[in-house]
Image 1 (tube, rainbow over the protein chains, first blue to last red):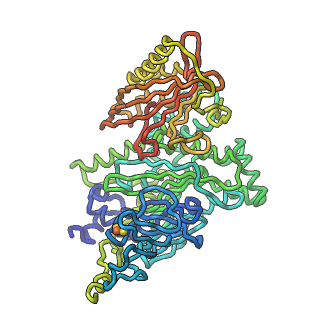
Image 2 (cartoon, rainbow over the protein chains, first blue to last red):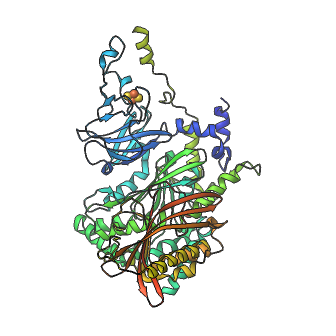
Length: 453
Length: 179
Ligand code: FES
Ligand SMILES: [Fe+2]
């Protein structure tokens, strides 16, 4: 292997990273094993599989998996692979598989937790090591699954911290998203967008808290929104959410960036919570929360006003506009973003309407905002393929980060602390190959079976 | 003006409630109107294209096959006059990084049929389209379009345009210009 631990370690400096971390397919393959093989990854929300047999396919890194609801009400996450010849058992997407999975190739069937149910013409397997109770004849489960307030996470490594310990300080963003419902629950609603970006997955994570790009990259959209508002004589919500990117540097400098171990973090919101109480949607939302929790608690919930949160390896929840953007690496230079919208159960309809409008206008592939991001990500990918230099800068406000008991806080909202924090985590993962990986391992039991058959 | 988008009273159905009896001449006029519309898009004459619309006209590209309305589910486009204007302003802004080079397009429209009229008397027109787009790379889009046209003095104005992409549920990189 060309990528020794020394080489990997030398890719990350305190103030910069080597461009090959974005362009080298070998590094990408290792990331799938060492990051996506070890981190807790958001698979989907329980509400996407409400009934027995409902399934939803997704990916953990480069691994196709199925989230499925079993008859006992439990949610399982299994690899989308039949143990016979390896066929993908269900097509990508979602649906209901009924009481069991049935492979379309030779009709081996599996219970909803993946365990072997039966195979046709069993007589032909007599005298072999075929054993329905042996895991080699079942669809394999992802090593660990944990559900936090309806959010289903899976981890391919059997060992390691539990979900709560892994998420650390950013778990409060999931809490806040749920607490915004008067009954404390959310559900995925309205469908999800899928957007393909011609860039490495890490570029998008870095951009989530890159406040220096907003007024440059999005100039055409916030200028357009402002011009339109001028002709209207008002700034309705649809324009306001595009206008935000145009704030001056002084505004971004005042925001707070938080960073936590394992690459996570969050950023203070762009929109002023006080302004929100003046609009009728927020007022209705506030009164529904007051009724449920009391005014003080309602104020606290709505006052926790965060812009993008980063769950490194999973993606980004946006609590105020009820989104989760799953960031799914496809190849070293392609990344798919799946944008889910949540309904806050029990909250006024207008709150969902607003989330839907936000998804349509800010996150969709046809938004006026995202294409310019996608363009600059692609340019990073293309530029880093040239011989025009080897290092990518992470210098802004280096050395000024303040340590807190559970992480770090920036001294300035334009700091590149989030990128430095992500690469500290990256290095930690990449220099610690998992002791046991799912990928490529010989199934020793099967071999034993053959030896004794 | 604001939040026209959420106005659920708009009739987004494209199933006719009454038959429309129109002459061969009128049918030809409708066809020419549709040809003119896509020509304006292909030539990026966006301000002229904006002028084809009624004041409360809606442009809709559903995200799902057979999507009933744009209120319960996301849409690829759901735009009123204000948002159409914003899109045009952005696309025409010199710092529209993702429109450098600009999207070039060529539409082919066919199978134009008059389906009937809606409750308000708007003409419902169905057509199919092929659209070749180029920006850095070439892409092909296709589908069925429903226009709802209101008669005005000198012709028609668009009250609703619904574009059913054959691949509305695909993974897209971007859809920046009107289809
Ligand atoms: S591959 Fe699944 S039953 Fe043969
Ligand atoms: Fe951006």
